[in-house]
Picture 1 (tube, rainbow, N blue to C red):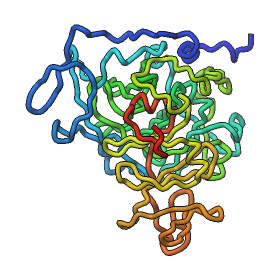
Picture 2: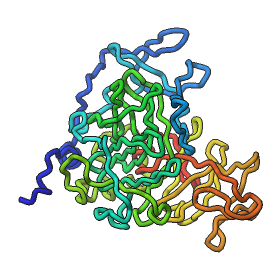
Picture 3: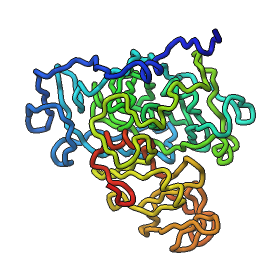
Picture 4: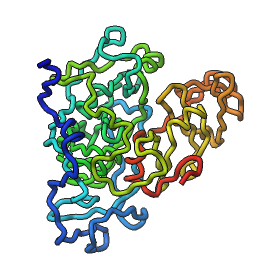
Length: 409
C-alpha cells in the first residue's frame, strides 16, 4: 500500500466520516448551578451566556500589552468588545455551558499544531499550485503564505511574522480562517488543538494556562483566562497565484512539518459544498446555503454578515456597522479586504471606475493596501479592518441576531 494513504493520525478523517451524533466527554452538571461573578454580589443562575451592558460588570481586559521592545503590528485590531457573564462550576470558570463543548474525536494535540514552521522562497516552492488557497499574512514588511492544504492537517501554526508572535488558525469544519496575536499576560504563547468543538468550531488551548479558546469568537470560554479575548490581525484568504502578485517577496510554508501526512489530499472531500453539518450547533438559519462563505463583522453589540460573492460582484461596497463606516473591496477571486473609510473626520465614498479604486470626495486613487497613490489625499492610508471569514452556518450559530448586507433576513 502506498505510504501516503497510511495516515498515522486519522483524527480529521474520524471527525468527518466516523463521529456522528457525538457525545461530549465534558462533565455534565445538570444538577449544579453556576455562580455568576459580579462586583456586588454572587447570583445563582443557569449557565447560559448573555452579553451584558458595560456598567453591569467589571470590564474584562480586551488586550494584552506587548513589551516595549517588541514591534507592534501596524494592522493590529481588537474586535472582541462584548463582556460576558462568567460562571463557575465546580471551581472552573466558563462562559458557555460545559455540555456545549463537544469532543471532536481526537485527543488534545491529536491534530498537531506546527510549532517550528519551515518556509521557502516563492520561486523555490514545488508543492503549491497557483489555484491553491493560502492564508496570506504581511506584518511590518514581512510576507508569509500558509497553504490550506497543509493547515487542513494541523489547524494551527505558531509563528512570528514581522516581529509579532502569531497563531495562524484554520477550522476546516467551518472554513473559518483567523490570525491571532499570540500574547497573553505580556508573554508570547503557543496554542494547540484541544480536541474539542464549540458550535462545530475549533476550540484551541493555550500552553501557558490550558485555557480553552473559541477560534470563531477569539474568546477564552473555559479556564483561568475565561472572558479574555485575543487581538486579531487582518490577513488574506487568497489563491497562491494572486498572493504572489501582491507580494513577490513572500515565503511559503513547506510540508517539512515534522509530521507524515497526505498533504495534497483533503480528507473532507465534498464536505465544503454538501449542506450537512456534522456536529451540533446552537442556532440555525436557512437564509443561505449552510456553506455559503460570508465575511462577518461586529462592532459593539452589532453583528453583520456579507456574502463573499456580493463583495466580489460589487468590487467596492460602502457600508456601515453600528454606525461605523466601512469599505469592502475585492480585486481577486475568493478574496476581500476591509477598511475604515473615515479620514480626518470625513467619511469617504468609494467607487471602482476604469479599473481603479477612487474616492468620490476628492477623486484620489487608492491601491489595494488602502493607500492613496495619487490625488489630493496621496499618501493617506486607511486603517485596515479585521473580520471573520467562514461558512454561514458557523457565523449564525454564534450570532443568531446578525444583520445581513442587503437587508436579507
